[in-house]
Amino acid sequence: MVPQVYRANGPDGAIGRGQRIHLQLWDTAGQERFRSLTTAFFRDAMGFLLLFDLTNEQSFLNVRNWISQLQVHAYCENPDIVLCGNKSDLEEQRVVKEEEARGLAEKYGIPYFETSAANGTNISEAIEMLLDLIMKRMQRCVDKSWIPEGVVRSNGHTSTDQLSEGKKKSSCSC
Image (tube, rainbow, N blue to C red; front, side, top):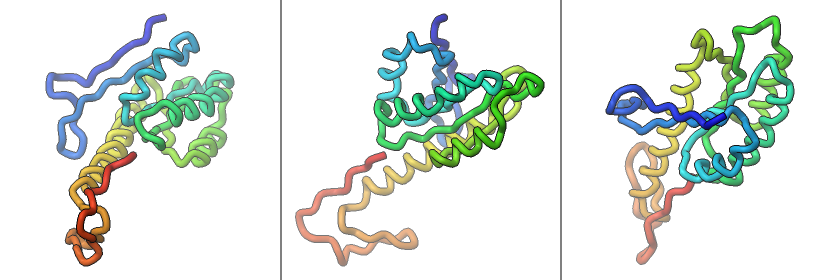
């Protein structure tokens, strides 16, 4: 098995909040042998679609480990993650209950979708959710990077009353 790379259709990439963004989806099929490869890519990624197989209990049990790996190796401390239970079209083969999966997503404070690669159910919605989370994070970082430390921002205006001389601009962190 070789990791797959999917790129957004067209030369301009995907559109998120009216902005063009470069989108790459890496599919390692949960293979442990790609662990060193995946951790290298985690460092450059701003968000993750974390999929598990609804028909495979072990796949679901591995989610906690994958989230832990993302938190350790990702670009930022609390990366944007969308959890997807895939193969929702195979209801009669399902072994992971929706309540279980939703509970795990709630525990980590991440969105959850039940998806099907076979029929396309919720694929676009999950990707759009991830893009929206990333774009919101980027906007917060841009907003912070232009406001000097100590400045209070309210209603789109800044107040320099609290700004001390010599303070540097705040740095953006994830």
